[in-house]
Length: 190
Image (cartoon, rainbow, N blue to C red; front, side, top):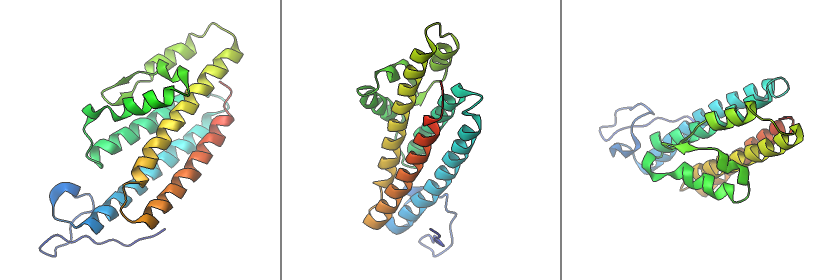
C-alpha cells in the first residue's frame, strides 16, 4: 500500500508528518494519515525484530523472549508517543493481566513504568534447574502470552481508524505479522 501524503496547516503551508496530532493544525483525515505513517514505521521496526528473531532461534533460544519483549515495549512507547496515552494508564499491565488468565506463567514477567523488564525472565531461564522439557513449556507459554499482548496492541492500533477500510487493511497486516511471529516462535526450542 503506497499513499502520497501532504499535510497542510491552517495557513496552507506544508507541515512535517511528525507534527503533533493534538496541535489542531491538521484535520482528522491528516490525523489518520499521520497515524498510518507512524504505524508503517512501527511495523518496519517490528519486522526488523522478527528478522533478528529468525536468525537467532536456533542458536540463542532465549533471544526470542528478549526480542518479543522489545516488540512489546516498542508498542507501549507507540501508545504513549503517538496515541497520546499516559504511561500511568497501566495499559500494558492491564493487557498482561488479561493474557495471564490464559497463560499463567506470564505472571512471572514484571511490568514497571509501562514497560516489561527482561531481568526476571532472563534470571529464570539462565538459572533453570528443572527438566529441559518443563523449561520449554514455561517459556513457550510466556512467549504465547506475549504474542497475545502484542496482538492486543496491534488490534488497538488498527481499530483507531475511523475509516473501516483502512482499519480492515491494518487488521489484515496485523494478522499476517502475528502468523509470521507465531511460526518463528514455534521453531524455538527453549
